[in-house]
Length: 428
Image (cartoon, rainbow, N blue to C red; front, side, top):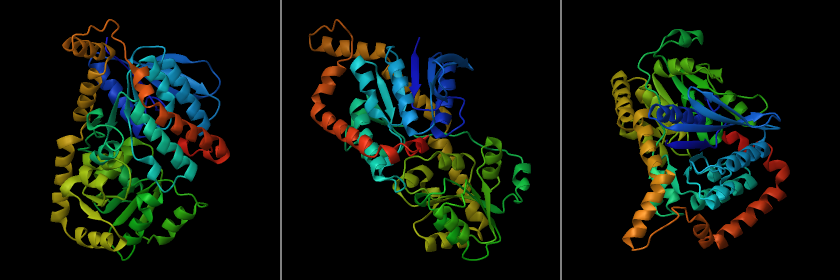
């Protein structure tokens, strides 16, 4: 039976973030197509490793004593050790602890990395955290049998580390929203079609301050519904709140999926301020809901939202976008149609997951062995083992790997007190 082990998430069903949502969709999709799927999940406590099933998906539940970055790293290590006992294909989501995956490579266990975003360029991370991400970015490229980039710009970045044929670009997906009740919208004091949505963590690189400032320049006759947790003791959060006019509504963090879908579906437009990263799930979900999209102008968002969106790169330009679009129903309608077309073209779950299955099938151990045997036969050499020659491949890159590993250990030891205090944890 075709088997896949999924590592790097907190587990399923999804309750934490984009990778968990993706893991749930992929696991159920492959289950329906005859695969055996095992998903590793992190729990807090000191219980032994537990095994159970959820909707036909096997789960390996690994407990660690705490919930900060150090314990998450321990969970990753224990998950990898467990997976290394089996010769099943692994899919690792994210590269936070990629260097630990040397165990899988040395054991000859095939492992594909979804390399996520270029995390080490984000302004929010401290210097030691950026160094850690940079080192593991390299290790993921070296140690993975193959890499997945969720955006062409991410693939371009990875091509500075590995050859093009080691990378496959597959974006993130979403569920289309074609109908939604109005009640959840009205419960927040909003009128369907008379507000815009912003759904993002309140961080500088997500342009929340610029969005609120641009919207609050004048009275708009629309509301701006801002989803997310804003803390009074956070200077940036406080600055965003101070910049807001009376037409800006801070709704808090909303985790109920049907409510978020309704807020998206009935909004006049979605404002997306993310400046870095790859294919952002929130933007894909906005396209799936048929939102007119106003997005920060960068290489990531331009590919995802396409030509039908409106773009900004400054407060003034965004304010002008609001002026033009909120007074032009025809343009908003065309933008909504363009969003749905872009979504149906490349970003539905069936499209995305079928691409994953095709790639994963190529790297099943039996198929790797068959391909290697075919190559050997073509050269007149018979491969009697069918095993991965991972150790020799790793040794070829040992000088660079040893140098990077030494640097990572120095960083971890030197900055232990502030590095493990939740920074990597925020990635999940």
